[in-house]
Length: 385
Image 1 (spheres, rainbow, N blue to C red):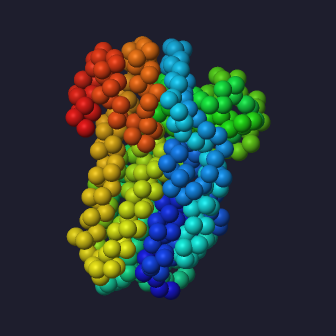
Image 2: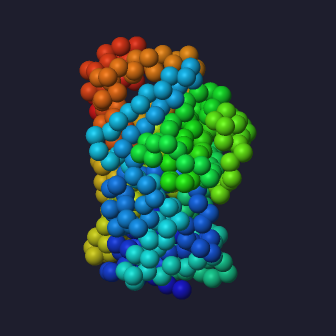
Image 3: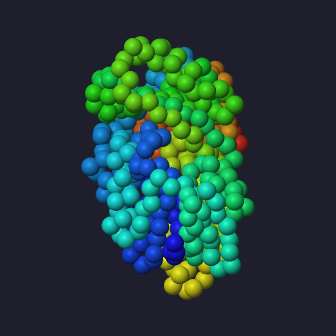
């Protein structure tokens, strides 16, 4: 088989990129699972801008405008947003929407076949798909946190990871417009737990830092503590989120995007906005490169410059916040809760954008100057963004 661009990974990042390239280029997308969108490995809480990228309004399950943040000592901060802040999507349907767009644009989506190896061969990249070989002129690696492509082509992987587990339970939260976020070393060490309203079902999950044991143990304790352990479990799913982006995401004839490049946001773990934005940029870079007949590493570096201009500083700053967060004790978290529990601070927190969470650092410091004592060097760095 031959093609212009081989996309390894049939998730939203790879398929969205394929949908942009396919009208001009011969594109093949390889997805190892037999059905796009399965298994689900995401909480599905995204900003409206992500849904708008692929016009996937039919995948929206609920709309959210605020949050309840639970601290270890029992303090609860209620944040009321100034409008819709996020939507909950059916990730399976969302992923299939992206794949459908790719196919309608002319890309071939190959399901149930794993790209077992890739290698460079002169002016081509050879991908072994099952027992067949695909000879392509360029390759987009969108094959997740364990990206075999990046390893085989000598590119790095994300610096850190968290392990997550989630369950949909047959239980309806009273407030359908707010998510619940729970903090604490005994709840979810190195990350947080959540409860997301989805009508008659509530999506409950958590992640734990690498080295903190299995998330299943913490989820069982969390469900017990909330009085939900006896609720009917509709579906359980799990996954791993890479954190700390790869510094070099381009090579000759090759680009990395999404989890393969460690583009998940270190504070929330969400990766659709960053990954799909990078996927679009990768597609545009490849189209230009083919037009100029220049797929060299130097020419493809424009992709890396583009995504770093768009959200690179946010990923760096968010990772700095994470490094401080994982060292915080429950007493530290409770101290932070006290400082944020003012009308001025809560008003600023409620304006936050989950795609750019550190953007509120400056107004938050103005509303609550005492937060400077939490981590002076971190906050001063965020102020210089």
